[in-house]
Length: 151
Ligand SMILES: [Zn+2]
Image (cartoon, rainbow, N blue to C red; front, side, top):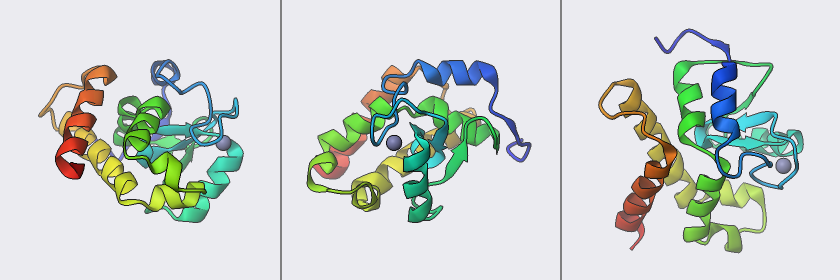
């Protein structure tokens, strides 16, 4: 099921377009969200996409929202993600403060955990283990697990 690649469905583009924070680049607040960091479920601008690419695909997997093809799980990563959600998470762990560069921020343990949360959740949704619930409840999920991991 996941092997079929297709252009990002217009309906899903609209869905993620209204997620909090998704109107601006996640890293620099530019009004360009043509690119995505799939494993963070975030939208970024072309300049930040270049930075993300330099981190390597294991740290950030970059796709174009309009030019690349996508698998179902990649699309679901974007539906379950959102710039505001990741920014909140980073703020809670104070990753936004101590890291001067985008690079450092995405190399932190917290960032690794966030990627894992998102991936696990999408796997569960695609397996039918949990419903693809609205993102507001995912927020709670992140808080709870980050609490267990970090406090
Ligand atoms: Zn940017």
